[in-house]
Length: 527
Image (cartoon, rainbow, N blue to C red):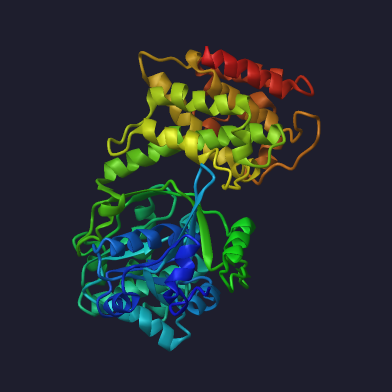
């Protein structure tokens, strides 16, 4: 059984092993996509194949689209050369469900794989051809937050940005500079409208993308490298829009157990490739079943009917509220709580932590009781439903090999949003008081205890990377809590800071104290 266009014609072999195959004619879809592209995506990684690729596949299956996806890789060309093209742009999506079952589906919606290599004229021309077409509605991105960075934290242009601005839109060589150059090419080709949609998991992602593109548009306009009117085109939302979005789906790197299961089915040529840029890719992608995508409804050339397959189109304010619901209450604080206490209690997977009654009760009560009182309700998603999916499907999923050690990275940067906003909300409400918080101070005290780098059995462990680690190591617990930027609050403005320190002292009494104190306060919070 070969994962190629010819190979999947052997439908019987695939379907007998439980694979869902495309029912549409991929050749017709590819022809229509080349002639009249509607959607191109930058970033050919796992999340794209598991989420955006599957969304388009579902639209094609339902007859709601007649064109497929073009994908363009601008960082690691080997992904396209060694994984996409040898398999005729097909992928196997293995959905790992919380009940222990899997769904195996061949994704056929990706019909045009491209490389953003300006040094390869033929390859780059294919991408330009897509941008010339007036049919193009959406250019989407999953290139990670750092992909949009064109300036230093102090606001100075990066050397690559300076080089690309000096070179102009037709000779830019950096990733985002080349993308801006493609938008200039679209402007020159008729100034057709289009939506540039970041789908990366970062706050206000549309603004980050806009700021990056604007930097080049302004630079090229100022030095006379851009065609007259390009800056006005970029800054006119009726021509080019930069919607915000909120995306949520866990897609780990290809798992060896999944690979073995597919090989047992008879799928050939499944070898995982590690590219020269250390990207892990395989002809399959494994992901959780739960997924959310909420997008600001700003599409000047018409929108892809993603709302027919579960995506929510809404206004900017609502996208922001959905993000706050997730980050401040329903997911991220729970992750951090499990990360801190998981490291202290010697756990190495999140799903194993959910089999620990104390830790399970910690996140259930933290979310359902303390967080839900001040949750931001976006209206388009029920916080209770979102939280329930996190607690009953996502965190306990045995297929999700996420670790507390990974989630513990950069905790000092996460606390202001994940817990600081809840503290602020309690202080702002007349009917609430931080005196009623039990688990939020328990988590903060646990983090102070975590910074010692010694687990509950007295064994040293390596602290996860954090930009403030060296600074924090030289401070006392009180000094750390007194730094308002850590929690984005003055914890000592009421009794909260003193209670955190008191719990920290209990946690530090010796071997076994972490378990004892965790159990004590979790029971207290459930009373």
